[in-house]
Amino acid sequence: MDLKDLQNIVSKFIDDRDWRKFQTVRDIAMSASVESNELLELFLWDRNHDNEILNDKKLLKMVMNETSDVLFACLSMADHLNFDLERAFLEKMDELNKRYDINNVKGKNVKIPSPEHLNQEDR
Image (cartoon, rainbow, N blue to C red; front, side, top):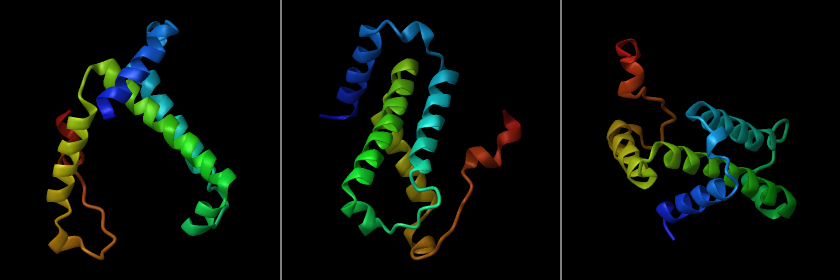
């Protein structure tokens, strides 16, 4: 199964419930943000290390559910705007590989602005 298959599952889920008429790009983007924050909320005030989370079956299940909700929103956006999320992701990874060249960033905690953020006044 690939991303397009997952996108088709999401599309069918939405269409079977006749929910498409309620969805806008703004709504889907807000949903992605809300779901991302629900994932983040699981770790609020929590200092668990990764291996502790892996051993906490209940917390791990909650992380899996919230992560899936984020993915659902991303797949919904791709479906709504009719773009190939897999291709978009691979293009983004290509950009990140160039921007964060291994020889320049390996072992360093750095943030390099994307070209889009540098040229926001062009919008």
